[in-house]
Length: 151
Image (cartoon, rainbow, N blue to C red):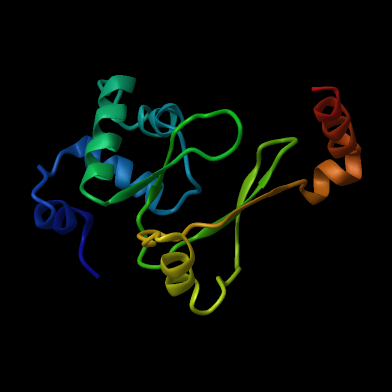
């Protein structure tokens, strides 16, 4: 397996301390906003600013090392390490917890998307929205559903 430094060189990016720290954080985490990444790396280098983290996340996403996604209804962009196989997520509508799930897409879905919709799939990603066990057990899921009905 190539080191993060080698991966940056291969993608024609400078091997900066900030980029390596960002990749290390995201390599083993769930999708995070630039602000969340900043909170995790600033203890290691207090000279880093939020704008530096954001710019580097964007540069890494442009080169395909990170995936950008806008999950949930908050509209915030989250960054995720571009693993070899796609990771699918379940997202709680009440507490906004995100966790990976093991689901398979229907066999032949790429061909179906192309034939039926004229859509070429580049990056398959499944996001399943609902309510986690904890929110259902505590009644927070029902509270959230009630608020949504009022809207």
